[in-house]
Image (cartoon, rainbow, N blue to C red; front, side, top):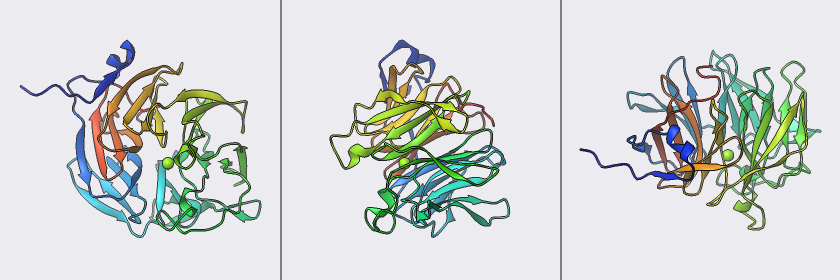
Length: 305
Ligand code: MG
């Protein structure tokens, strides 16, 4: 008989329908400096993630094999895959968003706006129309730990949209202190963006904001949820529209109406997460020095897309 997992914290009855009460939080790998940016590739069944200060990207496969994917990584942070299954990466070191082509070559998609260098792209998501949306806080240029220390050239810490046809880079929000993780609702009518500015300023609320998507722009945003422990970094939206977000004490799950449903407690500060595995029901969690996973009763929106 196995011990009942104690990693779950129930705040709403709906949470029971999203987890398996007997599923344990597993520690899959350790020894990273600041693990971030997990992304699952359904074709090859591979998880990639970043170790930002370690200047490396790692590759994990379900047989338990961990290997080096890229070194040096340019202080890579958030990752996603595009409609063609290509890796898209935010790099602090090069202050750019890059795409890794199927032949392994690397294409710079965005490195400057208004003739000035970006701050340090942090996290990225690709919409079904191919547009690439990413956040540009200053974490990668604040010091020499997660990038190269430099003065910001941008007047704001933007959320940007990169047009897939013209390559035009356009700000869609400019009033974040430090925009961080971002994700669309399943029907892409909403964009959620994390505010992580409390990392350096206690007066900044630890919130996820939500904005209506109006074509290439965003409408008026509002606060979607407040994180009651630590701050929101990376997050994902599941097929039901629930928001699974990183927090100081683990993963917090919010219903589409903003209600906190429950938490999956993780022993280290969580930076980011993604759904993956053969059926999309395994939640991979990057948390400080380690990679964790837990089977859940949900999957990413559009799975196995
Ligand atoms: Mg982040």
